[in-house]
Length: 377
Image (cartoon, rainbow, N blue to C red; front, side, top):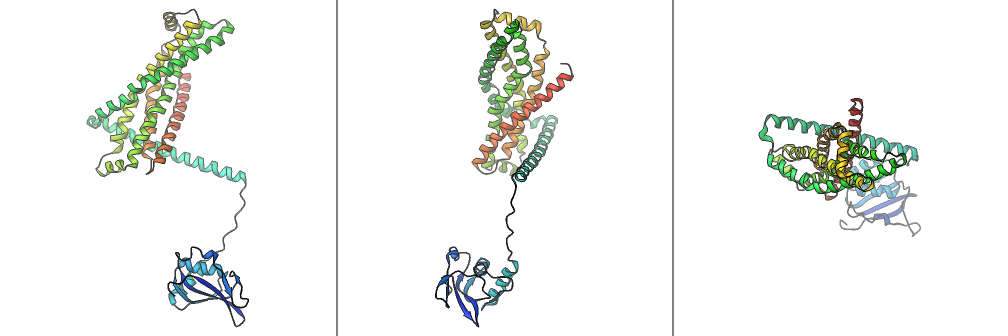
């Protein structure tokens, strides 16, 4: 009987329906028990159980919680249904399952408005928690940086130089080409719009101020976020998947000091250099366009720029550059450290780091613009 399949049979005793259970009732033997039919002695037919007053489980071989629950469910048993079993352990198990059976609550209809508000609430809560964790990470980076300043041997100069080669020298081509083309487009649009007022010569000032104050450094930051910020996340994330970061912690090495700090230092130092290159490329693009659409030579373009555009328009862009570099590198490294053990997590957080970096760069750029506006710079 111990190896028998689970069966149910309906009988009648003293005019009352009784459900007889036999065979093995365990979690492994009841996989297809939903298809189980009960043979009725009175009618000779096959039907499912429902609402019997007594269950006879004396012929049950092995029994576990899942099997007891299935018998009670098929029998439509309630808290007062009598269950008889040959073994005391089986009887106790039936009593335990009966005492904890609950009728599931009906699904409550949820309105689309409540569902939308719930989703918005969870999104804001996740964003707030993420912001707190990001601020905590920034604080840890700053503490590690201050500690390294007082103990210069903590700076890994070789790693910083290697990272600068990747984020600065290798990015010169793409930054130069894109900023040059943006300068051409900006000069062309300025000439087209100002020509209606007979003021097309002011295209020089428009290009110089836009490139120097905003577009040069902002475009460079966006390019770096997509190129270097994503690379930081992918590199550290892959190390997380391969458990290399955990191995570093086991050996007593601080991942912030060994992985994060060199990347942040390299990008913070490289961003002003890249931004300067981007501004020069953008101005050259503007000069090239003006030499085509206006009667200006490239030399005349830069002479007018020198005479009419203040140097602070260039300084304001350079002040933003290291801040942008710090933010992009810190976010890229932070998201890399959040990677869990899967390749899908690496791709998702790499995308997330680029989006967050661009978002924070634009927000900080807006804050700088307000500060410079009130400072009359």
